[in-house]
Length: 347
Ligand code: NAP
Ligand code: ZN
Image (cartoon, rainbow, N blue to C red):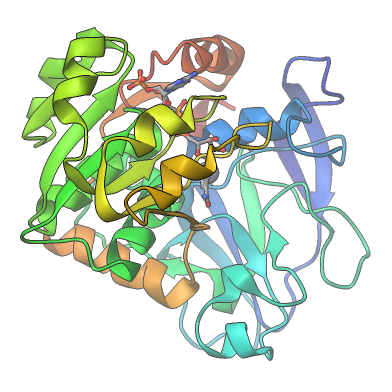
């Protein structure tokens, strides 16, 4: 076994605190890498608080992980000691179902194995995430990271990046489209960057009037304060797509009004309560509400390569791991500019 250090939640009621544990030995198909940076996703907070379902405790969150390879198994072909490596939200899947065979491991018909708050495929132990000094992952779920990028600012691409890249690619959002990004947080700010990079006309829909200048710096063409009835009225019926990244309950009918006929609301945010939608909000204008979960490994690599080639990284605020609880408090208030990243040297 490999001794590992981490910050873990012992229960939904307790703050994260230092915790030592063991990871599995490096198997023939595994890569072990020491973690340099890990992004802080709102999903980390949802899960340690049992917002979605009862979690597995102790829980080591973190699924925006980058680091350097320290050991590889005998059969590993694509990584060697010293390489940069990354892992996102998944560490395994069945690899043989219809979806896995089409590079959609995130939709594995047997369920993918999540990086934390999940059981390893053989059921032997829970998985533990990236708020830790080292990790062991099977080769197929390890991503290559360019040596030329800002490593800390690249970490959030492993979740916030792929989660926004994948739906925009799937629905072919680009030139000639009006895209609205709802919620300017970790996912939202990446949605703006990709929307702009793909050639769409991008509007940020935000509850925070003070984010307008940032939104424009990120490349957004327009900014709507969603609490302002006049601005919402002016935006009605104007968007081909809305990328909904909101983490809390919100009024879906109010936002569906902003779509044009045949418009699509792409939901990636995961509030703890089910959505409530008036049927008239959909049938008047043949509108769709759709969902999207992270992205497959092949597409995640494509996204990382696209970002490296186009100088796209996340806008980050680096934190010391002991300040994680304060960072969560700011995240809940919508005060993230625009992703916290833990410097793992502080563990
Ligand atoms: P985040 O950084 O906290 O951003 C969420 C943003 O939503 C906030 O900054 C805020 O933006 C807006 N917001 C918050 N409460 C709101 C409310 N009541 N009404 C309207 N807007 C509100 O969170 P994140 O890390 O980007 O994650 C966003 C959500 O996506 C989370 O639920 C997370 O679990 C989920 N997620 C899903 C996937 C997937 O695969 N689908 C992957 C990763 C994360 P403004 O200040 O601009 O209003
Ligand atoms: Zn995430």
